[in-house]
Image (tube, rainbow, N blue to C red; front, side, top):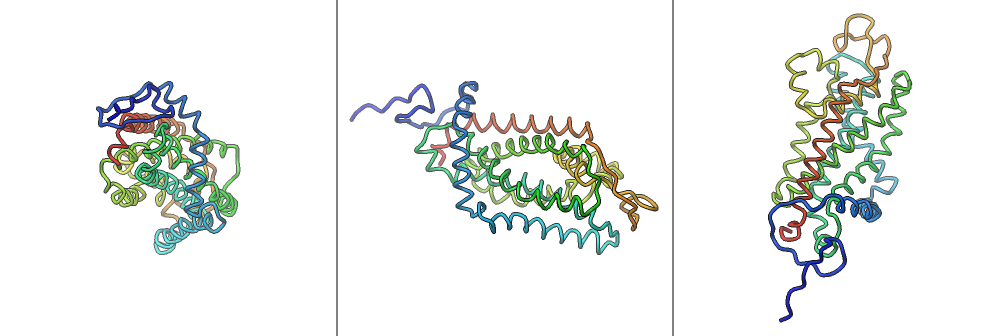
Length: 308
């Protein structure tokens, strides 16, 4: 029998690769990320292929991405606003939509990222490339799916009479923090899913609970009115990320008498600038989660072919 082919020094060069179990460890990160950037077009092509397969590149496929959270927002509006008698109207609906669309972006990127390594097992077995491209591809798909929802958010922003100011520019760095945070979650759970295949069954329940304890159904102002809940929310990384996003986008209601949410008649919607404490906390969460998720994924990726 001929001797087994030796593995090339460059993990991503063409040739025969022999995959064997090994101890977790990080490769040289500088050439790794250089190769990762060089193959970005491969990730974009893979993302477009997955989107066409899921029909999200079509008109009706994109419409469903809008309709699903839109219907969920209507349900919460009925339960929280109409039945409770608060009647905050279009402002609260605008707040709900802005929070739900972003939350769907985070949860969608995380859940799809957790499954992508298992789904692309054949690609991993037959191609040599930096495996971190796979969860980053899922985040790119989540961004593309989020873009059609911006049209609905813009319409609701004007319908709710929220002032349009330069503070809205802060939504760009806030969204960048959210993208980085989602990439870290997707990378971490993608690696975990290889070892624990039932993780994909657990994540939808986890995200539903996460939704209820995040500033989506409730506003940041309502959370700040309850000291114990406010302390608990600082353990939630979505508090500074979603809190800043919804406040900058939807503003804050001003009541004719009393304070929200107890008042039933709104006077006007006041603009709220970026919360710099939230911005710093969101950046810290994003960097820490991405660093942990990406490094854990990279340290395990050479074993994926054996596990799959």
